[in-house]
Image (cartoon, rainbow, N blue to C red; front, side):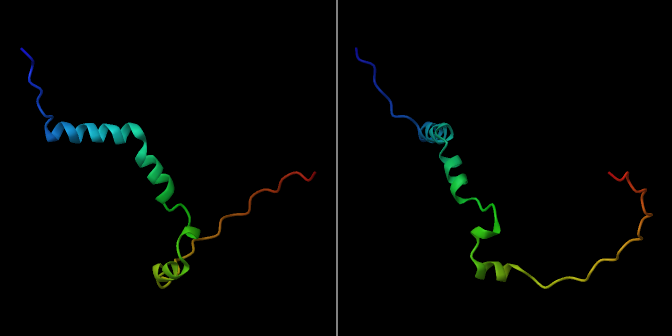
Length: 73
């Protein structure tokens, strides 16, 4: 008597695909290529739209005392 093979469930197929992607490092490659790490990677016209108006200048605190001068060398 030959055992009957069953089709895998959809949950098992999704779990195997997730394991494949996790072990394959596909997301690491995508993150390396598509993550913005500096403003030089952004189009200048988009950068101009991101900048808003300057806010009011903050209040300056008191100036501290002058420290001792070091040895001259």
